[in-house]
Figure (tube, chains in turn red, cyan):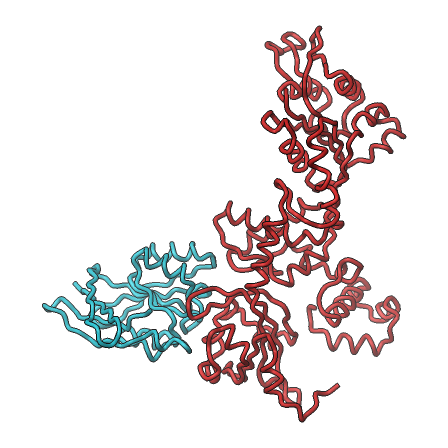
Length: 443
Length: 160
């Protein structure tokens, strides 16, 4: 649909809330709307006729100009988060989009850039960030809220707790939160990873040993349960506990006593047990690798922790949390993630859950020294997830961009064979040709 | 020894307040550049070109190429070179404060080629190179000759 010729363009552009400016082929500003004046602090008279880099003063000017990328690559840029420097020296975060301008013959005659002030949005995000914190657990999604709502009551009791959740969902964080909210908060919290220690060591580690129990046992050594006296012991990967220790643990849960290795007398211990696993314990009970009586002893208060894909709305808050942490650790001042990175984060599946998101942010810190984390700072598998970008849960970008990625990914999968690509996508040869012409190289 | 004298003029009618800076014999001028012009944003510069100023002439004295865009890394590198003056485009207030606390006199909000920037510095007038919307920052105070042959009056447009 072509734009009606009699519409006063000036009034149209003046009404846009986003800043907008156009440049000619020599990078001189030819138009500067009112919102651009408001955001940059410069008047139209001061801007028009000047080089755009002298007016816009963005983190992309001087080598990474968005309009130049458009002109060179032939593609539009949208929603890139950068900052500009206003006359008073303050850094203002903005989101920009840029596109080439062509005349009626299709020749490039300049470029257009629009930009939006992000400072209010970022301020609101920071406020949400502050509100979205419970103990050290960050997030306020519905799925997480369901767990957090009952945590205070669960913590206040002395019932054994079983935390179920995939790897990387923060089971230890929740265990600590339960301990910190309980009357035992001033006593020790002792974590034990039952899957990390060899079976032979695990018993002595958990229950301790007496001098002479085995070679080199020269003195008594208290186990982790004894060390947690009055407090909480956190048994992570409880599904990996060997059979003989399951019996001992069951006895401890029932009678609050245990025998150290080589000991003759039972030892009493007032310790609350919080256990966690990413295994399906019911299935293990059915298979006979986990005791049914122990399962029911542990399953008094069960909290199921949502995976990150079940709480996607927490992803921005979590990303911001990790950025704040790494900024403090590394002495950097990274502002946040750009809008297109946020799209990628929201679309990714996170098999490693929150831990994977933390690793991604940590990786990005290696390549990003300041400003906003951009797509090029992300690990390769996120940058080049074009195939995933076309599947459910992986869609991001404009419809044209999604179509381009789908076509290119299918062509690559079929080793460049066009007919095979047409058959897979169920489109004609002409349709494929037209789509490829519209898609820039490398998209 | 060159002893630049800097004027601060607070309003049209007030008396000028003179500030003397005792400088080392060598005056090092740094330009935050992108290719052959001043970078529009100091923190974006891909090269910091250093010039030695001696007897009203400028001599190339080196080049700082800093791949790290971290503002603190760049500030430390510039300070380590013994630079006295920095000419640049737009600059964040915190970066500017950090540089000035390190003893560097910063002249920001400038645009132009390297030659133009050097000419402006040697000619003691930056107003023609002011970025759009920044001309009011530069108020020319004129040149003053100091006492004694070794004192050279140096005035600059005070940047506010």
